[in-house]
Structure formats: structure tokens, C-alpha cells
Image (cartoon, rainbow, N blue to C red; front, side, top):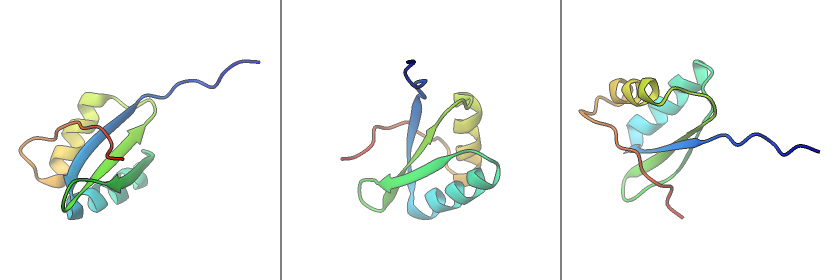
Length: 76
């Protein structure tokens, strides 16, 4: 019996509207994402799987209109 492959996840905190927009756009592009509560009026967008991190961060920066997109840890 083999164990399932570990899929690393990237967590990015974005403003509420940008997070929902990015979620919808990335899902349409075939990137599996999910949202979780962030701090204040933000959401943590989580992307797991085989996605190039540099491409993803650049794509999120463009989708959100932010000057920079910062990785974060999920809030529990």
C-alpha cells in the first residue's frame, strides 16, 4: 500500500473582493482553490497541487491589482 502523494499548498491573504475574483478566475483556468477566513476584511486563498509558485503569485498580483501578494499561513 502506498501513501497518497503530498501536495504542497500555497496560502495567500487577499482583500475580500480580490479573493473571490481570483477564486472564480483560477477555478475557470483549472486551478483548484479554496477560501478561508483571513484577518479582518480578508480571505486566505489556498492553492494546492502542482502549480508554479512564481506564476501563481504573479497571476494573483495581476488579478487583485495589488502591488505585491504575500504568502501567509491559514488562520485557524
